[in-house]
Structures are given as C-alpha cells and as structure tokens.
Length: 211
Length: 211
DNA sequence: GTCTATAGAAGGATAGAC
DNA sequence: GTCTATCCTTCTATAGAC
Image 1 (cartoon, chains in turn orange, purple, red, blue):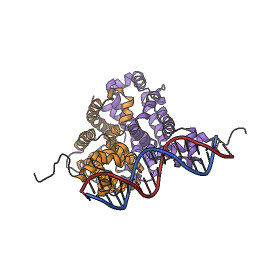
Image 2 (tube, helix red, strand yellow):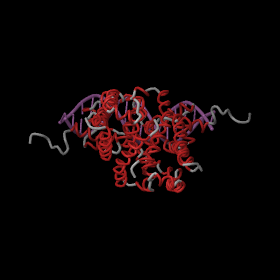
Image 3 (cartoon, rainbow over the protein chains, first blue to last red):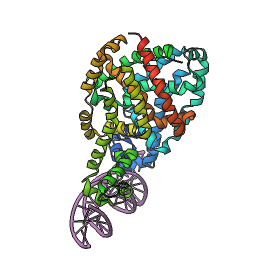
Image 4 (cartoon, rainbow over the protein chains, first blue to last red):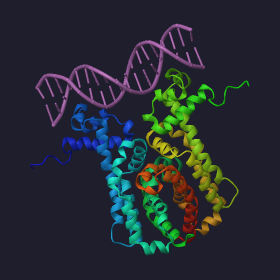
C-alpha cells in the first residue's frame, strides 16, 4: 500500500481531470479557474502553483485531448488489414470512443477555430502527409478500382470522418430537431446503427459512383 | 434623400452588424461589449440603451443567424422538383452560402451546445416533423426504391447535411492537416468540387447499398 | 504543498449631463 | 439618442503564512 489512493490520484492529476472537464464543457473563455479548483477539491492558488496560468493549464489539457481524438483515428489506418476492414474498424472504434466522449468534437473544433495558439500541437500528433501516402500506397489497387485518384483523397477522408464526428458535433442541433433521437440512449443507439449505415453507404458509393 | 446613408445604416443596425461579427468570431463568452461598441463606432453605454444586456443582444443576433442558416436548408425541400434535384440544389446553394459565411457552422453548433437558453428559437424556425413528412411523402416511391424506410430518414438527412456543413465546421482542423487545401481559395475550390463529389457519392450509395 | 487574503485588471451595466 | 464617468462584480494571479 505504498501508492496513494488511485481513486482520487495526486493533486496534479486531480487538477488536470477537473480542468479537462470544465474546459470541455465551457470552452476556454467560458471556463473559470474557481470552478476547476472546486471540482478538484482545492483552491485557486494551488492551480497557479502547478500550472502558472489559465492559458498554460488549457494548453496542457488541449494537447492530451487532441491526442486522444487523433491517435485512435490514425493508428487504425497504419495496420495491415484490407481497406474495407480499416473503414469498418475505424467507424466502430471511433463511434464507441465518441459515445464515451460526446463533447470532445465540438470542443476541439471550436477551440481550434478560436484559439490559434493551440494549433501548433496538431501537426506533431498527426502526420497527414505520411498518413495519406500510407493509405494511398497500401491500397493503391483497390482505390484505383474505385476511381479514387490521389487528388480525391481529401474528399474521401473528410467524408469518412464526417460520418462519425459530425453527428456528435451537431448533437444539440439534432436533439432539438429530431424527436426520434432526443435522449442520449436513443442517440447512442442511432450512432451504433450508423456504423453499418455508414459502411454500407461508403462502399456502395465507392463501387458504383461516376468516375 | 430623406433616408439616412445606407452605407452605414442607422445606429441599431450598425450595432447589430458589429455584434454579429464579434459574436460569430469570438463566441458568446469570448465576445466583449467594448469590441462591439468599437466596431459599431459608438460607446458601450449606447449598446445597453438599444439592447439592455449582452445576453439580449446575443439572442437577437443568434436568432437571425439561425434563420439565415436554416431557411436555406428547408425552403428547397418544400419545392416541387424531383428528389435528386433537391439534393443537388441543396448542395449547390448551401455550399455557396457557407463559402460566404464560413464561420457560421462552428459558431451555431458551439453556442447551441453551450448556451441552452438560446435553443428555444430553433423549433420555431425549423419544423422538422413537417419537413421529414414532406420529404418522405413527396418522394415515397423513390425512397422506397432506395430501401429507405421512414425510420432511416434521420440517418439520411444527417448524412446529406454533413457533406456541406462538416468541412466548414472542421475548417481549421482541415487547414492544419491538409496542405492541399490550406488557403481559402483552394478550400473554396475544394468545396465547389465537393458539390458533385457529394451528389455522385450519395446517389451511388442510395442506388446500390444493402437494404 | 497547501491555504487565506488580497491585489490588480477587466468586464457588464448604470447615472446623469447634454 | 449619445456621451463621459463611474459603480460593482467577477476573474486571474500573487503574496505570504503555515
């Protein structure tokens, strides 16, 4: 029993967790250091002791969130499995991940658009050039069969990730409009249904679209 | 010449325009009354004279933005043209609209998720139940041919709008990752290319997907 | 490392003159 | 209607005791 209680963790971790929750919920400008301190069960002064400023605390949190979001996306595409398997695995894994982190997409997208200083981290996390080449060269034959040229990759990649990310980013718009999937339980079922819907949709389109 | 100069408009209009720009750029919590006053060429006191509080000014602005965004979406689907034409017209009109208002999607989605008090307006602007029934009954035959049941409508509708909205909502993520479409000129060309890409993608998928 | 107390600045809102 | 001056609250950040 030499370790501290893992249920609450050490102070720095508790601050980090609290900050993650508050920033994700309120955004950078909406977040309050007082609320973070309260949730971490400490006082404001201690926040500044561990992370000198709000900005620094935010950057630390944001980097970790970016990693959480993108490592999942990119790691799958580096595996040695058929293209169709990759898409299916991506949709499955990513949608399950987002069901556990539903507010992450809108938070990341919004802060990226508002907080330019936070952008730097992304290129270190995702090497897009490498990723695109990896996908395109590993599945050159299949993609050519679909009539996908290298210059079409951005259209295809944005389309695929939009299937999982967009409904979460637009969660509240959807909630307000569609009574069928108002509550979270129904929405999660809708998203699980969407795994197959998206996979069928994508591959039917690829096989038969105009070229 | 009894009217005031339309170039700058009256004070209330100038405030409204300035507020729209600042809120759209910074979000509710990030926006500053001082900045709005500066852009409108007046002082803070006058803001409060016309719109009592920041909250009220924001609500007024937000309602108008919601309308701008959704009237375009919904009006097309009420027209008396074939289903395929509707999708094409929607993609064309909406993407052109978003090229002129690129920051609107992330702003609306973020505020809807953060500012619950602002949600009320949406149901008055978009009557989803009516819209879904309209689409489904007007094109029952065609949709049945595609194997789209009434319960599939949410999947289909979210998919269609994601083609236009998502790339704008994720604009900065895309900018940071994809050097091919880093600058706005290239991105706009990419989005115009996307009109046909999306249309082909959607109808190939509908015609051939598993049912 | 952790706390209390408070400095110092910024922001929303109002009073009152013109 | 419009302005200047100012109030009051909130927020980030720090000083200093323990």
